[in-house]
Length: 87
Image 1 (cartoon, helix red, strand yellow):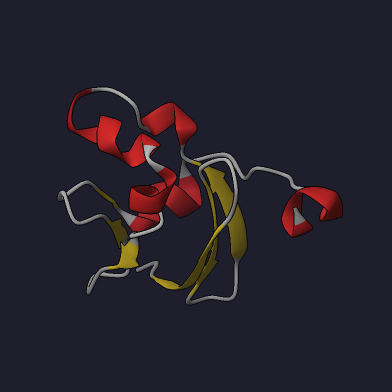
Image 2: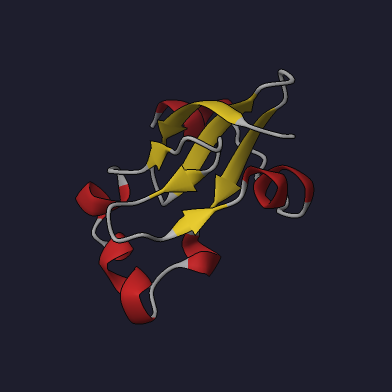
């Protein structure tokens, strides 16, 4: 089973994550937020409250969550340039 073991919230609603098998991936969450109860995640301070849940996925205080298998196997990796990483 895939599990996220480390995360870093980046600018523009992207999250860098490391999985238990060593895979590193950056996911752009903008396509997944902004409507209904996910609208509050557009507040970047709230977005940064993301945590790794006990099952190795991601979750926010409002209950919105993502399965680690979905994030690793079915969501495209966002390719960042070094300038995007440091800014």
